[in-house]
Length: 432
Image 1 (tube, rainbow, N blue to C red):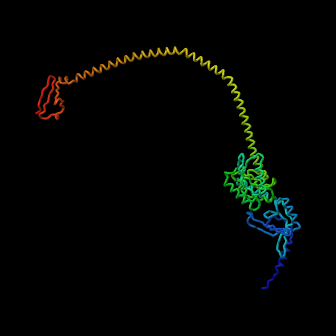
Image 2 (cartoon, rainbow, N blue to C red):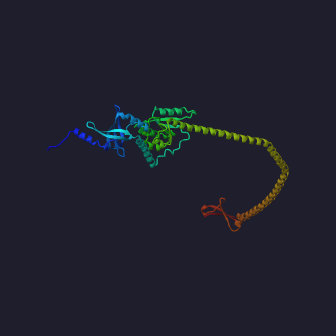
Image 3 (cartoon, rainbow, N blue to C red):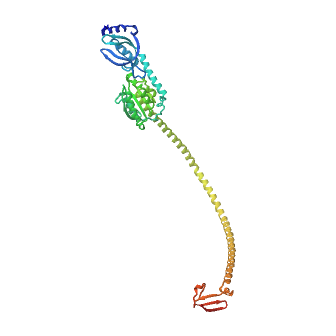
C-alpha cells in the first residue's frame, strides 16, 4: 500500500507556521525559574510548573532572553526585588513561542514582572506563618522569659563570617566590661545547606540546654535573595518551639524573614543583637547601683535613728539609774524594818507549833503505851492459860523418854523406860 509522507524538516516547518498564531505570541505566563545559564550575553533557562506539593513537574519549556535585553531585564528585576536572578524564583514573564526547524521549540522572554515575584515570596511567608498559627506554635518562643541578665550565649552563625566577628567584637569590648560566655555552633548561612545545617546546630544546642541562657542566630548583610532560605517552614517551626529564647539578627534592618516573626527577639543586625545583650547587662548593673545606693541610704537612715536613740538613752540612763537606786533603797529600808517583826512572828508561830506538837506527841505516846500494856496483858493471860502446869491440871499428862517428849507410838519399843508426868507427880513405866 502506497503511503504519502513528508520529511521531518517539512513537518517542523508546518509546526512553525502553526505557532505563528497570535495566541502564543507575547503572552504573560507564570512559572518557576530553573537551570539558568548565561553564555555570550544570552540567558538560557528552563521554565517549569510544579504540582501543589511542589514535587512533580507538570510542564516544562526551554526559554531564552537575548543579550540585547537580558542585561536591562536582569538589572530591573534585581533592583526591584533585591533578589538575584537565579533558579527557584517564581516569575511572571512575557513570552513568545519560537520554533526552529533544527533546535525545536523554545520560549523567547521579552519582559519580566518583578511585582509578581515579590508577591509570591510574601505569599509564601504568609502561608508559613498561617500554618504555624493554625498549629498553635507561632508564639511559643516569644512567650519564653529571658533571664534577667542573659550571659551564656549559644551562637548559630557561619564561622569566620563578618557578621559573627562584629557580634563577638561588640560583646567582648563593651564599655562596662559585662562578661559574656559564648559558644559557636557553626552553620551555613546561605544557599541550599542553610536550613539543614542551622537545624543541626539547634539540635546540638538543645542537647546542652543547661549551659545556655538563650540562642542567637546571626548573619551579616548581603543580597536579599540570600535570605530566602530562612523563609522555611521546618526551620521556623524548630525556632518557634525551641525551649530557649531565640534572638534573630539576620541581614539588614529592611530584611524580614519568617524567623523574625517566630523568634523571641528580632534585631536588625548581628551588631544590634550584641547591643541588646549588652544593654541587658548594663540595666542589671544600673539596678545593682540603684540597690547599692538605696542600701547605703537605708543604712544611713538606720544609723541616724540609732544615734538619736543612743543620745536619748545616754541622757535618760543616769535618771533612770537614780530612780532605780532610790526605789531599791526604799525597798531595802522596808525590808530592814519588817525583818525583826517578821522574825518575831515567825518565832512565836514556831513556838506555838512546837508546843502543839509536843502535847500531841505526849498524848500519842501515852495512848501507844496503854495499847502496848493491854496487848502484853493479853499475851500474859494466854501464856498462863496455855502453860504446861495448867494443862496438866486439866487432866492431861506428858510422856518423856530420855528426857524428851514422846509424840508418836512409833517412837517407843519394847523394853523402853518412859516417864509419865502428871500435875501432882511422875510415874516411871516399862514398855511391854
